[in-house]
Length: 356
Image (cartoon, rainbow, N blue to C red):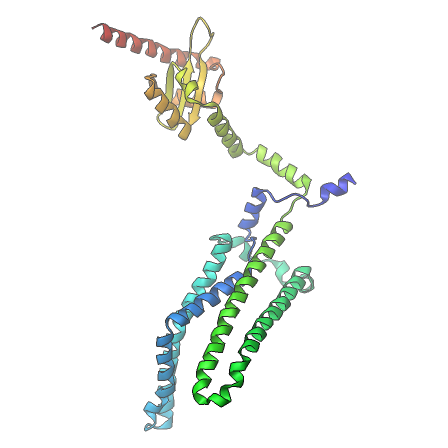
């Protein structure tokens, strides 16, 4: 039973598992979000440029009449070229905004991502057996079920809109031709608005499902989690980060104030030392930090008039070989003694200047 339970994927995916999956292009994504974003942007563009599009449609309808007096072959060529040019003018902004919306829809879901590993050639992709398995996979069946639900939902929306517009449509013959365009325009407007709302609802629901399903697929067994943490524990970068966090916790301004001297390199590393021959056999490390912590130590030292010496080699050696609260290593006694002699000389000079 214990062996079976350890092989079950019951654990949530770790950040590392999600990062590795992202590198392979495996992220929670919904096709419906990108589709809905495209529809919204295209409709908004058509709405904003509706006057221009109406003018272009009129030009397309009237354009062939401009060449009625030419030979058919020449007229056909000119009309085809002109209509193609006008259609390209009309389609270009729609294609541009649609492409932008599709990219934006994906970026909104999982950020900017380029995964070259996902486009590498794979022999399994052309394997007919694997292809057959994919066709009848649970994932494809779920996609089919989602498509059916979407069609049913959209059909209900269209039915609801048309049903509520039936009285106006029935009265059109009594109203005459002048009512046809306004009634149809109102119907199309309702269909467009309700369809967009339906697409937004579908895309939100689909994204939530895809996110849940992706997290479920990325679940790990207890053994996988343990193995990953063991691997991370041996990672030098993780160890260094852990050491920095530990130093950040223990380095306080009170610890720095206890220092008799701070040794720096020149701004990246700072090490505080305390020594009292009557109390300690060897100098003790009072504070130790890198980058941001080093700046903090140097700032406190400056505020409290603690001597600061720049010694690149010694600062690096102390940082790599010691910890806060520890005595200095025996092989660094000589260089550290030189530092404390310098501190004594500095104090004597300050004393002499004070007496003068």
